[in-house]
Amino acid sequence: MDCSIALRGLGTLMLGAAVTGCASVAPVPYSEMASSAYMAPDKSDASGRVPYRYSTPVDWRAYNKVILEPVVVYRGKDHQFGDMSDQDKATLAAYMQTRFAERLHGRLMLVRERAPNTLRIRLTLTGAVTNTPVLGTLSRFDMAGAVYNGVQAARDGEGMMTGSVIYGVEIFDAGTSRLISAYVTKQYPGAYDIKASVGALAAANAGVDEGADALMAQLN
Image (cartoon, rainbow, N blue to C red; front, side, top):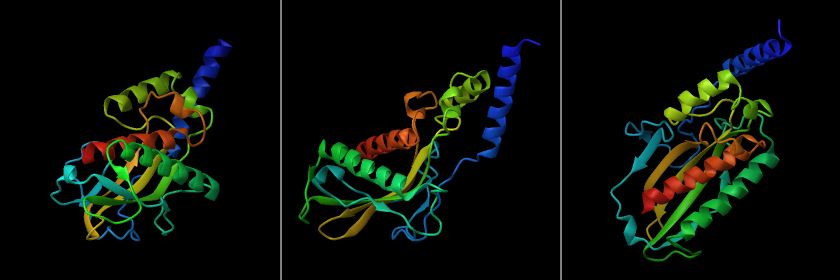
């Protein structure tokens, strides 16, 4: 038997075994998030990226300022960080703070004090999955991986052995402290985003970018 064919076959078997052993992490309505009691399954979200949501009728254009609270790293027992280190959690939280501030600043003035026409946004990092070293990137070129990732790309699903980020968003009217919107979301890069497969937190960071864009789409 040709050695290269045998090695490719072995690689595919290993890839399949790895995928079988890694179930996708699904967000939950986290018990220690203040807004969890208000959230309900979001049946309008076909992608599965936002499984739980609370919403009220809001004229988002009436707001021109925002208070972005420091990102909270969730400590509840139902967190979904797996064995992620505290250092990686802190790094990811810092990245979230920076990227969301940058996106929000594109439409809203970032402020620190409560005032009329001001939103207050709290981000709670509740879980994350790191990329699988080496295999996550190789799966974009392996035949079995290409087929799987092709199907996932068509359905806006997660790529093979790719990381992700899960977090909660709570939006308040800063003047009244009234909760006007909240949701839990899982974000990840496109299944064929090779750049996001290189580095432990690359996919989670890409998910943060996706999530910040999604929030801005809601506020516009």
